[in-house]
Amino acid sequence: MRSKIQLLLTGIISGVVAVAIYQKIAVAPTAVTPTYTTTASPQFTPTNYTASAKAVTLNNEDFIQAANKSIDGVVHVKNISTYKDKDASWLRNFYGIDEPSRVGTGSGVVVSPDGYIITNFHVIEDATDIEVTTNDNKRYNATLVGADAYTDIAVIKIEAEKKLPYIVFGDSETTQIGEWVLAVGNPYNLNSTVTAGIISAKSRDLNTNDDKNQFFLQTDAAVNRGNSGGALVNLKGELIGINTAITSLTGGFVGYSFAVPSNIARKVFEDLLEYGSVQKGLLGVQGAALNADVANRLEIGETEGFYISSVIDNMGAAKAGLQTEDIIKRVDGVRINKFSDLTGHLSSKRPGDKVVVEYVRDGVPKKTTITLKKTSRANFIGLELQNPEATELENLDLDYGIKITANNNRGLNRYGIEEGYFILEINKKKVETVDEITNYSYEDVDAILFMSPEGERVLIPFRY
Image (cartoon, rainbow, N blue to C red; front, side, top):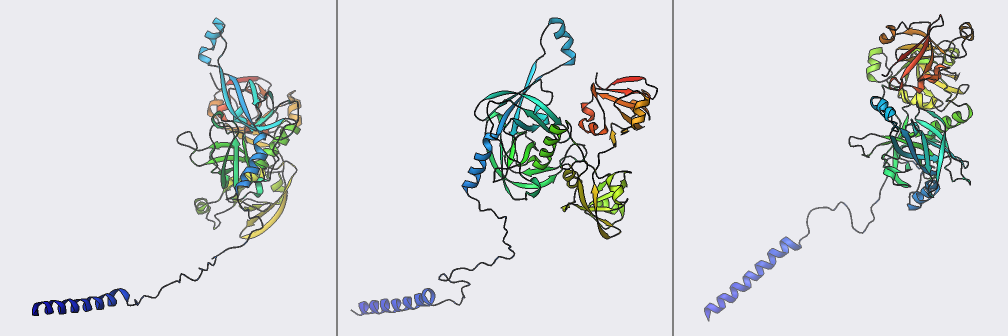
């Protein structure tokens, strides 16, 4: 009996102790102060936010409407060209075998209801036949209206039985980094493909060592082979660029694509229709874009802008009073940070256009208005060239040609080509002004026809 009572007392005491410990550990309030309460709604305060009147509320309809407005205005372009193997041509001629054909494909943008189409120069380069297929699967033979290798823009035309759907031009100057865009084209022969992305950068220069247009809009909209010549449109369905290139280690899209801005494409299009060639308006200055390294070499404090190393006589900049060592900061309000900023803006201008130039001289900001003029000088394969005076052509009984003012090409020196000679033709095509030189790079030259001051003509081959 006593043992049972002892067990009972032990159980009661143990229970009391357990309850006391539980209340101490699990029930008693902690000393930690909560940083928020679950009943009150959290309050968010933007650190730096300004409402924009240009802000776009994005939804699916934005993409759908832009795609619907643009997809029928993009066409498939087929380039059929004859491939000539110089080593085998004589053998084919001997046996009467036709030269083999090559077929390349790309895209084009219909920009008028009567069938004018903008595409890339490299899409139709060396074409013997150009074939266009519209989005409703109708096929047309196209004619080449004109092309400009410098900007990589070409214009072709088809004759359709009805008015064609087309894409209206937008203003590429007003596009903004981060803005949504659609790329429309025919990658890998997949007709009418639409991809979406944003503008990643503007005035992008891919190769500072060449003389081609380097003023691209960069986007992350997926672009692949076959997209060249297609449309880059904004959410209004307006054309803001012609898709032209990608950078890739694999040959396929890796996140970067590049488009010629629509303002440049439109200007080239209008020039080719009106004049037959691109009209280039220049300031008349030479120099380089500033950065930290250039600024250190020049021992100046400015690291942004275009540093003028020389001013060309009788051009707009000289007449407006610009001088060597001036630094151009803005043109028409466009900030000049890279060389492509300057050349890109001027690529949308013509001779006779006026631009407002803001520059710095000895640390003092200044502003002037400059009238753009055609270039009268050029450098090409080591030759310094200029347009001759009318009397010089008359004295040589010439109707065309450009004059060599200096020869720094050792190979041409061996042929006796020197100052005073004229270039009459490149690849059997007449050369009438130095403007036309920008249509050629060294790799493009097969032969040049020169003429001496005494009237002797010399044809020099560059390819054998």
